[in-house]
Length: 56
Length: 276
Image 1 (cartoon, each protein chain N blue to C red):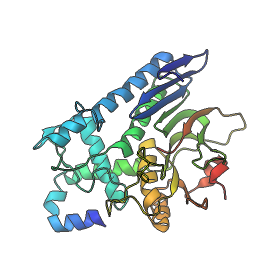
Image 2: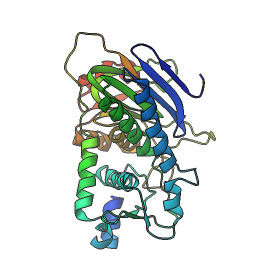
Image 3: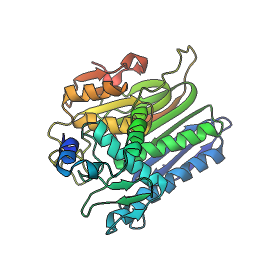
């Protein structure tokens, strides 16, 4: 993939400018952002419609 | 519809307002004051990350000849965009292939000359997340925030989000969740009528066979990054990517055929255009 190819071409120094710890923190946060949404417990009450998603 | 409208009833506050080149929509049982505060947060982020406003911090970073000090929120969203690029195997790309160099310790950002930073793929979702979280923290028992269609809900029990169909004559879908983001990406026509706006990051050209992707994930920003990537990656790679993070998605080809990934039964209450 392009990111890995670029890293290989430029060597580890350029890719590590962000700092390994900061990079790991960012990747950890993105993983959390992409993790499952909370569906909530099954409910028999009527739920309100609170938003409309559409192609962005 | 007036361009800026806040309506308040005894139990519901809604707001519709232009934002980030599109529209901000807030629906909540929170207070009108909290709604205005949330809207102000979105407006502040728009000023900060606008690609067209010459006074925006983003434009300042792009035009600077060397490293500049950036606000922590800007450095953070750039770091997240770079991380999103790596974690989606390159399919999500906000930097045109030229990642900014970030010095987290000193808060410095250096954008390579000619780099094309476009945070639209993450900024709208991030703004929706920030606004919804603010409403929740201000005491709302439910809140739905959409910025340009990227949606975040925060609630104490299940709430519903309709998912607009891009196919004329077909029915909107409905998903239910308590806390999370919903994003839709797909080959909407460009304003100039020339093709669509989804760029293949590996060729730099419009994606050859894009699809519509609906993603449900923990946040609107996360859902948007995945939706963008899943709209253009080969279908097996898109499914793998979504499931790798535990998100859920519906991948709809332009002929209407649908592939579901993740746990669709956990969220889908009205299939509409996402059905078989």
